[in-house]
Length: 244
Length: 191
Image (tube, rainbow over all chains, first blue to last red):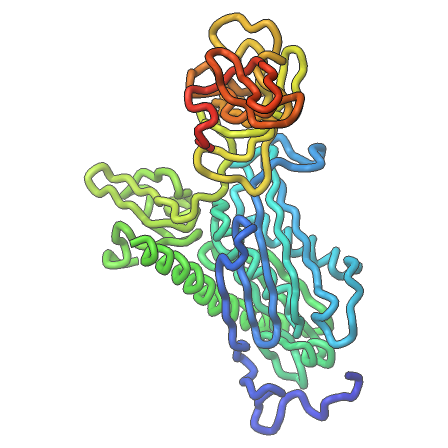
């Protein structure tokens, strides 16, 4: 793993997997694939494979965590031991705990929390296979799972990352680009509200590069949003056809 | 947004705009931000052009919590002299993934006087009840209607399913006679 790739971007300006700098990985989103959850979604973004499940709103346990005026979102982001090349300990690591919090906070602005006082919504995100930008793919899947659970929301959340490798701003980083590149900017967006719910940066960028990266990521978010919509619509159109 | 996009019955997702408040009154399933009406759920847009109202009919019947007047089904988890606490697992027709806790007070069991809560239900029984209040962060239940009360009960001596016999419940296996506030459709599998 540690050997450096010679070049992350070749002479033709293409990346390791043959993508152009502003190209997303192929994305597949499926809705409602877990029967025990109130809402669920599965996303494949390149080699990423992520399951998200949403439960609730339901009574909070332990009860002292419930809030009298609104619901609480709890989120668990977890990577399966087999999701990366070297076995990952199944216990939640520092990174996973932080990502759980970050994902929770990027989903909170969308839900109508005040409609369901004293209840809780649980979101479980299981990374089955990881290949960079899993937090973005997780947010994308989790927001679809919440919509599938019927939780009233202001908007869906689509997330995408941008970054810099070999002095080029690129969209949707994969694992090697994330590790060997010089910067990573994950962005989550509520497309209809045009509101950013997550914005992080890892590495160094000049303010101009940062602006370009954010704009590229936002463009990616809008493309992913179209796929989220498509996935949700296909599910409900199919359901209707079965009923008729 | 052009007019061809705005058709009744179109599938809308959270965040899809449905119009502006000058044209429609927003109804359930929608919300308003900066004068624009958006859908709040996954559903079908219903545009009522004669009454100038817009709502979204949900395609997913999720996100249900007990409301006043909703009929709930639950299992009795504990009984005290004047109160019984009930684990609600179904609201209307919707099975919950978790549960809510409700309280049935002796004064809300039936219109006539009740001596003790132990004559109404026992732990493990399945009850149908109506939510009458959600004050003090607790769902208060009532079984005053004849269709409300115990729908399934089990013998406190041998655990066998009880049969309703006039005003009492009778155990066909050990012959024990117990008291229950049964519904009209008791034991008919009406879960």
